Length: 404
Image 1 (cartoon, rainbow, N blue to C red):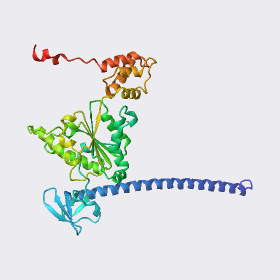
Image 2: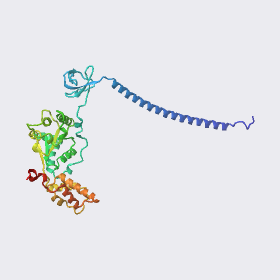
Image 3: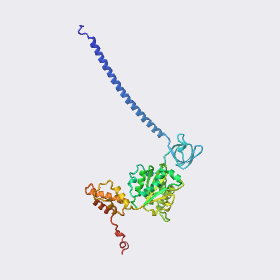
Image 4: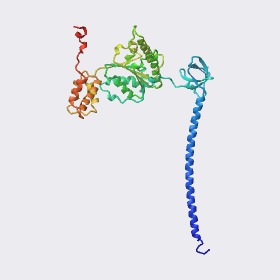
């Protein structure tokens, strides 16, 4: 071999180093790929293992024997309990070690083992979905500032409802008990329900609202059961406020002559009377009620000890209507010819709801005419529409009723 054909040392060494470097880089890429694949497999393994545990738990629940629902009647001194099974018989049973003694109270719903009838778990209280839906989760966006012309009523309701919750020590120092119930009564549209909504907004207590007609049920005992569960929910959520709107739907005066439907309403009323002022301690639960017909309410509802504070809502006077008008026109785009004092003088027999309707109708008339501002003529038409002249209907005239 000639000298020219022989490979030179430095070139061979550079080639070997480049080859080794490329090989190392390829191995590093391979290692990173394997590490990435390993992490992917590990996460997949964790996910499959979690799914396996979930399926295993579901399988164990399917294999577990069914439990029997029962009601706990009493707890004995040795820790055992007397329960009434859903099938009827009474049993003296033991409780699982995982159940805390303070959880076992008379009236609690529990689940029993089918074999030895021991208490395995404490069940949640059973309440009607209609009752659970009475609780207001989000407070209404109505504050006391949005209620006009009712300063005296606001002061009375704050003294009767809010003050006993915020400062109960004042009543203890004076030596009196706060009012148990507050009844709001007056003509429709005078602000009774609006003020109750403001109370729900201002207080931090749980607010439970029900309309009286919702407590009138078809089957015997259902209305009384709903009243009982409603107050149970209020006691569990205490401090709380129970507001019964249109109280006259269930609180009408009881008469000797009545139909079967009336008797069911009377049963509901009796349960309400027992809950408002009965043997069961009511706890930190305040009761508000509203009605347009206080004259037909049962006297048992209005006696001291049930609805102690009666707050009357009369038609707003001129000064009150000025405040109400200012509240409702505050966000309106009014023309310069609109005078609130003149509007107040022309709405002498208007309620707070009528004033709100007048402002809304005036805005609607402006929108109908394609304007962005509300003029005096819009209010003129709105007043004529909401407060028409009082005329006796033809059918109520004496000559039409009696034929002369």
